[in-house]
Image (cartoon, rainbow over all chains, first blue to last red; front, side, top):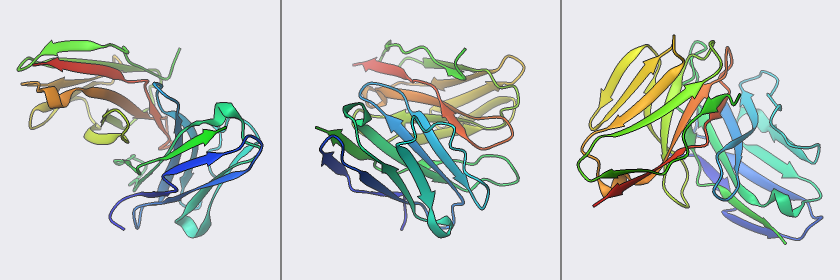
Length: 116
Length: 111
C-alpha cells in the first residue's frame, strides 16, 4: 500500500483479555517502530525493528507486551492480560534507513485501545 | 535529564508572525533530526528533516541544527491558524535509528 496501515482502528476490550494490534509498513521499508500515546501525552517508544537485527525492546513497559515482525514486513503488537492503564493510541511507523542515517519515518493512523 | 526536551507551551502567536519552536537533546551521537506536526486526534505528520549543522528551508518552514549546542529549532514564517497543532521534535538515538520524541509544543496561531 501507499502508506502505513494499522488495524483495527479502534479496539475495546475487557480488562484481563489479550489483544493483538497489526501494522503493515510501507513496502520496502526495513525499519518499523511502535509507540504509545496516552491522552494529552507525548509518544512513548515501545519497540524498534530494523531489518534482520535483534529488535530494540527497551521501551516495552512490562512482560505483558510483546511484538514480532514476520518476514521483515507486517508486525503484530500483543498485549496480554490488558489493564486499564494500557488504554492509549498505539502508533506504528516505518522508514528506510540508509547507511546508518535514519531517514524519515511515516506513521499509520493508529489503533485506539480502550480497556474497560 | 530527558533525551529530547521541548517546552510544552502553549506558544501563542498572531497570524502572520514567525513562530519559533525549540528542542534540545542529550545524546551527542545523534545523527538525524525531525520535526513532526500533530493535529488533535490525528497521527504525527513529518514536516522537516535535518542532518547537518545550519539551516534548511522548505516553504514557510526553516529547521535549524546546532550539534555543538545539541539544539534544534523550527521557524514557521507567516503563521496561519491552520498551523495550530502540536509540534514534535524527534531525534535518532546514537548509532541506531531508534527515534525518540519530545513531548511536543502546542502552537496556537491567533487570527
